Structures are given as structure tokens and as C-alpha cells.
Length: 108
Image 1 (tube, helix red, strand yellow):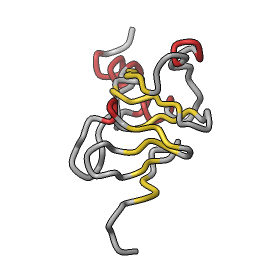
Image 2 (cartoon, one colour):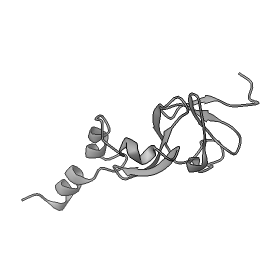
Image 3 (tube, rainbow, N blue to C red):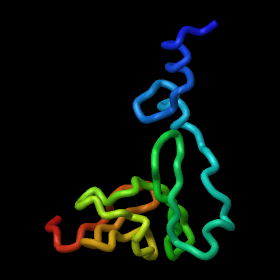
């Protein structure tokens, strides 16, 4: 029989847990394509984390943190563009991997 500590170590999948880190190395289905037919963004919960699933205007799907890194705007209200999801507050653009690729009015 497992101890409570061992059970927690093997069954907890949240961020920063051993099993959670292992599970994040693999693909997981999070939604059916048909669920995105009539909308651009959708909230999903995966491995103890709240995330935003979105489809950009080119048809590419992306999964990202639910809030913009700049001012924490909820990205469920994001604006789909040709290559990503734009924050509706200050216009930062995120690609399908969740990386910020454009920051309007910021010097490069």
C-alpha cells in the first residue's frame, strides 16, 4: 500500500509536480474541433491549469495562459488574427505556442 506522500507524488498533476511535469511532455485532447466551429476562443482546464484554446483566422489552433502577460487581460476576449490571438486591451499578439510575437508601440 502506498503512503499518502507517495500517493500524492504519483497522482497530483498540477504545475510543478513530478507527474504533472511528466504529463506535460505528451499530447492531450482538450476539445473536439466541432466545439470551435462557432467561436474563436474557449476556456479549458488541463492538468490542473486553466487555459485558453483559440483558433486564429488561418485556422491554426493555439493554447495559452488565460491572461495577457502585460496587464492580465482575460484572453477569452482576445481578437483572432491571421497568425495568433491579440489582446483586446493593449494589442499584444500571441502565437499558437503562447509566445508574445508583437507589442505595438514598443521599441524593438
